[in-house]
Length: 121
Length: 107
Image 1 (cartoon, chains in turn brown, cyan):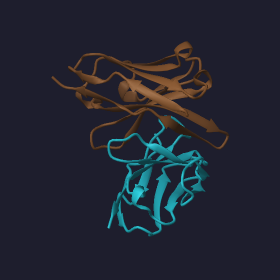
Image 2 (spheres, one colour):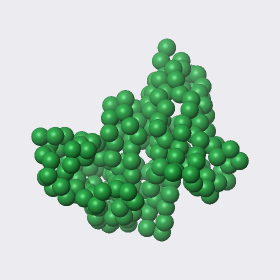
Image 3 (tube, one colour):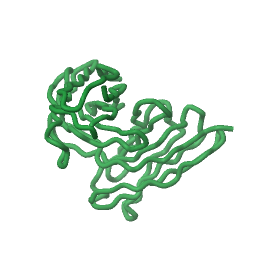
Image 4 (cartoon, chains in turn orange, brown):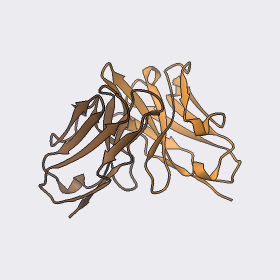
């Protein structure tokens, strides 16, 4: 079974830092694009970041550029999101997901279970 | 950025009804469109990929269609477990934007 299991998350003060982790199993992690998506409380989904197999291509949502860093360790089948200079508006459930695709499209599947990040004093 | 507009934002329907949700992109996205189902407190799940591909394991009552700018998700006969929020997403160009969601509720 293809699976992503997340860890990390929690309560952090504004300006603080947090690292999210995402462990993959059941598929070849090292050949997969990976992504982070977030969902603020009661709101819709927002694509945050993605990266290719070797980390040479990365994309960030404008509002997190310079503050968040997506990374991976293919030897550990793990994806990370380092979040610095956190703001109240970063409060959300963060999901990791594999970005799969073909010549006809790209899609997110599977998804991790989510990790709640709360930024508050 | 490409804007994705879903309609309706919410929908009340009964078990057995046929339901269609639409998604319009602000510019052409070919078939780079996927649909997700999300239940409260849970992660989204992929239903439809590349506009019309049915993910393995997803019930055949779900179907997707469209290309270019106009897309739709149809549930042919609603089942109790289908009451959830549905999102479309374009992955034609970054940022990979989502629609605002359609909440499907029991009438």
